[in-house]
Image (cartoon, rainbow, N blue to C red; front, side, top):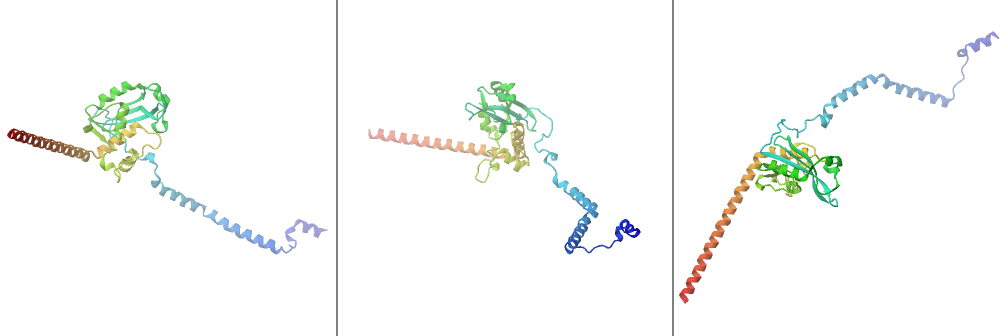
Length: 284
């Protein structure tokens, strides 16, 4: 009895039966796999160090666009009226929505500072605010200035000044204004800005290509667009003005040539008519 009790108290001392071969094989696989999985845990600290170091190295290359300086930011805070100003307009839909009317107009000076920025209440009822492009919403026009007031103010500001912009003919048409062609600097028509087929490029493409600026990614901003047009002009001002002078000289020469040609033709006609009269007089 005592021996039986001892055996029960110490089961380890009992004789173990041989394991089933399949079970022994499975147990061996489990042990080996456990040892493999346990290895990475010992080196986890080294792996975390490597990953942290890796992230530190990647930080400079993954700089967000927000941290980069804005190439369109004004160079100073001078908001005075300069001899060169840039203009941009945003349109809304009237009539059946396919007719455009002025919804906002912005003027900036040569440094990119805003000198005039107003939402405009069209004469006709707005049926399409075109918010997806114009950025204009109903609340913007509730307290907006009426069209005649804005038109008069813009006319005063641009008078006698060089006007810069992109597709200025559309903006002037919306304002029902004209401006001397010699004082227009349109970035959509400047020859170096045209593509290989001599077609116009969009302002956002010119800004990306020549200024490294991203604009019009969604709703347009007339302040941003006016600044982009002004900066495009300023960066090419010397060559642009030289081209303008060359064009004026060429036109002046062409006018003189036409005038001389007309004078020669007139003189020849007078000589011919005089000769005709003389021959008729002789025959009589």
